[in-house]
Length: 528
Ligand code: NOJ
Image (cartoon, rainbow, N blue to C red; front, top):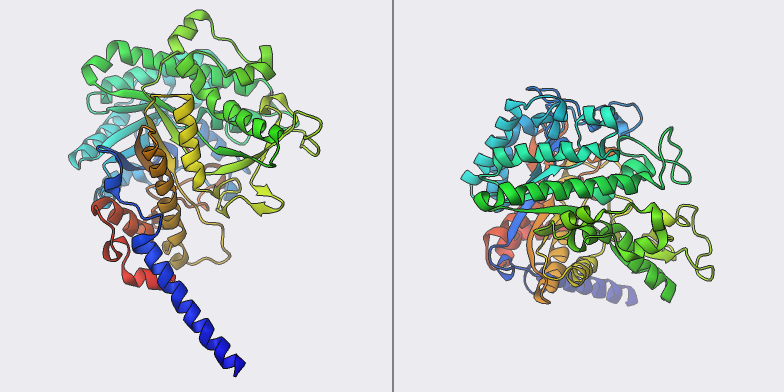
């Protein structure tokens, strides 16, 4: 008798739960969002970068980049993958633009391969075929009402600049970058209204010069054991040169192009949110320091003219100084802020003896701001796991990081230039598993809802770009980590829409989401 009752109860409960889930997902859930709730003129787009999708690595006059060389070095990239072919976007750009057009986006963020335009940097001529390629992309986007949002440097650098003078470690990079930027403004600036100079200088300097996992692979103990490098000094030098390169390019744009072309220029940083690991003052201060050491490191100089005081206090004279001329050049050299946001981490203080027990040797380092970050508290992750070990699903972090940026940099327009999800690896996953990406869809709905809360509190956010249009070369992780709305079959390079394509295009194309246009009933049933 009891057993029969139990079974009936279970059945009733599971039906109730399914109905609740269905209602949550389609109509009334607190994460229900509509495009029309976002500000007038808001950009909704997808994001990619040249090395990660283009392929054609030695075609039509392109020069070698640091990533071509690095990915060809055995053991550097998972499964020794490389970007030689990538998604073959170089030949399939029209098909890809069609995909975006059918999605209904009004913007597309992509990057220009420096070595496709200037195969040898300043030491050689302009590659006309490279210019032609990006002209075709820009023209075809505009024909379909899609705004080009262009990044000039997204990790890939002409190898010649690395070999001649050490790339970002040398002040000579500034002259080279401005030369490249000038050609971009001259060639594309009549049609491009949104420029960003450099993608994630705070991430690539960490990977390239602290950990040594990006080219040129420099590091020193306790961060790693590379044959070359100084993890305490080089990231600071590379960032200094990157910030000045940015500012010089903006100066050029403002003096020679902006009045005529009417565009704007920003820079993009990697922006994690940070929360104290323990409910203690020293961890709260450490979380604030993490924001300063990782995010304000990029934006304080460009908005206020100098590095954050939190960094100067700890690093002293090891932190490079801007001359007074440089200060006036960099201060205010931003029309908008670009933020790549994926996740939130806990922060633990390593500076005061009462709190800092069991910090790793790296956490004990000044360059890190005497702090350590982790995704776990007492073994429990801060949010659902993803395909990236340090990315957890923490939607509240989106609201918090936008609040932080709004408070620290009042009046700066903000763009979320990347936000995306890759699923945790699954043994023997079949195509079906990749295409039924309900978790990606839930991720974007929750993060967009959090973004909306920040906008309603007054943040001037003007755009949101999903990383990424399609699965692509995920740097050291190669092709195994998939962030795309479209699945890319590696053997044929066919693009196959995942469920999240249906959701995103419904979101973009209908002002009110109902069960019918949010997702088909069938999709929801499959999920339940
Ligand atoms: C940020 C980088 O800009 C992009 O290149 C990368 O693929 C994504 N994060 C995901 O890790």
